[in-house]
Image 1 (cartoon, helix red, strand yellow):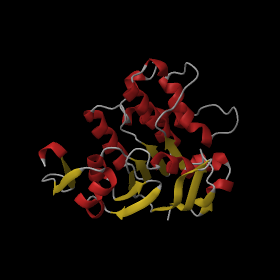
Image 2 (cartoon, helix red, strand yellow):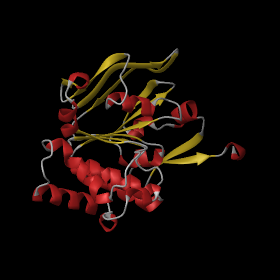
Image 3 (cartoon, helix red, strand yellow):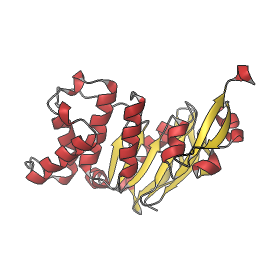
Length: 257
């Protein structure tokens, strides 16, 4: 396994947010994390990429304990796209994407032609090359998200973690971004809000409820009417899309039952 969380528990004061959670992600697998608001998705990811320290359990990246591994070594292997990325200074888009090269450089080492080529390619892949000289603070929410993904691409890590990557994006850019992420020859773990997006793009899905994993499997195995009613409190029918051949959810309002 490439990326493993083993028996993670996390609490704030007397409130336990994660209860003995284990996750296993194989090489080049796209694993989705779904669940209602407050289920612990973001907290789990933050524990897995070391923003938070678990009270119990371990996280392994390529077989090594992440909690004891040097930060720069982790950054060469793991890129993170969080929900919010505050930027305190007036950096341009190019400046921010170039920061993705930092783990690969020595202190005050200058950018090389290879670095600049990787940055340009990352901006082109995410459709932000035309924004390269704009200040990050002047961008829309969706544009900012694509800049942060471009920075992660420039990092050239083998594993990428994304927390709600399609937030603030219109449907066209949601699909373009998910197509891009799905095409990358790396291991992906992503918390996703849209269940149809998860069904279309993920190889496997973990379902969380009240800080625990309650289901795991392929989208077809996991996304059942019974689970959606129990975990999300909604009524839905599941079909197979005639073009994608992936599961598709059709929600039914209470008023129409």
